[in-house]
Image (cartoon, rainbow, N blue to C red; front, side, top):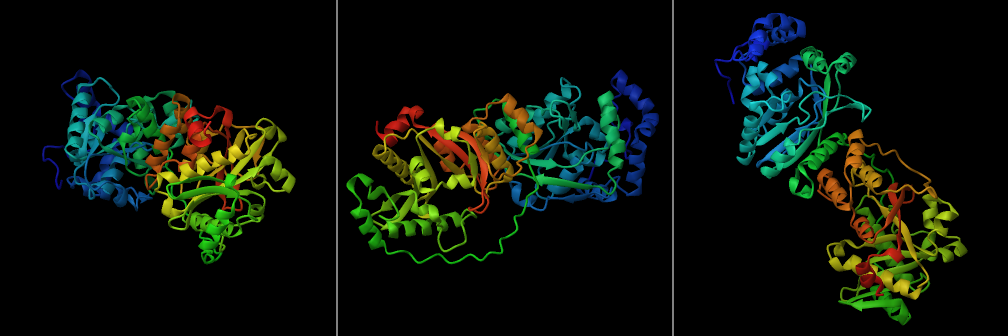
Length: 572
């Protein structure tokens, strides 16, 4: 796209877009000189002349116009990595400025994807040089004949493997009373329809910034004022920083269970929730080498010496059992080493040669041991509430203030914690399953316990907004427990509107998280496992002894355990 048509008038004016086949169009055509002066369009024309924009190829037009306006674009440094290199792709974005987002998109994307098209308001015909990239619709007149044609053209472009930019709000952001903030209007569901029909990937991009206070105040008086002021707002862009946050492209198949309306709400929420990446200062504390591997033959001997009732499962070459540190001293040392090794892969861990504390001597240790490889598969630390109180040890009391009523309502209770599966076994479907069958064996040894409680660590490898979404969707605030340390977890107003309109169940939440995480990971495996057991989630606290990792406090009522899980893990 190196040139524009010769028959397009080289003047930015209302006359460019006036349709003289209609009475209104003819009136606009003759009134154009006066309207151009009134609305500030004349200033745009003088700007174009001053910066020699007329007749330029579209990419050069966008670049020179942005430079002339003094626009500095920040945050798009990684867009080449995140934009799919080929195939049908919809780039969705919010619309806070109303004038420069389209030029920014051309500037950022045209060189990366020459097959770029932008669904644009017909009013943007005034920018004749950009027209080769535009597919026009009229969002102000939903039933306008050009809209159906524009949508067909968009779908054909996507099915041909192109990339399409959409601003689904169709108009500039304004004050939303229900959200109590300036935000986009509700997005048009055509974005979901097109994405699904074309089996396109979706890349969300969020523009930060806002227009002048006058723009919003006059727009509150009459919504048409916002459109009439856009030219003047564009010229106020001079020396303005435009920050963009680029999300991660994801497959629409993650949301097959949603209607087009629901999926559109999700796209708008995911875009609004994009935040500039934050960098956590690297710890200056040295990372100590792990201790050498303990004597595995000594561990096998300790396991063999356990009472038969403490070796609860032997199957597929694996042994699952439990014991105290006094009974399993070498194994507990190996557990502490493997915990540290595993947690370090999640940017957690203590940085010490092994992950241990005084509670290792108070809690019981459930383990899964691979007899053939002579290696630890994974482990849990289990504490009987009555025993913990008598022994003066309760790890979670470091993270939460519990009222006695919390335990009175859940007595008697077992505390589960410090769980892990060794890296070599994390792809095995047996590892976590065998550990939970081991918990069932522990419960058969101590049949009076009716509640399990503990935390799921929300690793800092998750985006902070993803963590906030998990917590807000899952937690049913419990007044009998409070975090000792917490951190603000702001979410956009669109998230709360989504939560009001849709049930964010565990399946939808998993898809939401996977679609915003760089590596496509969904909810933590252990969290999904607890949810399948019917867990209740009570609060989130920061673990000061675990690299400041958020921990989601939960409990499982064994009396209401799904029957299939009861048969699998407890056996009765």
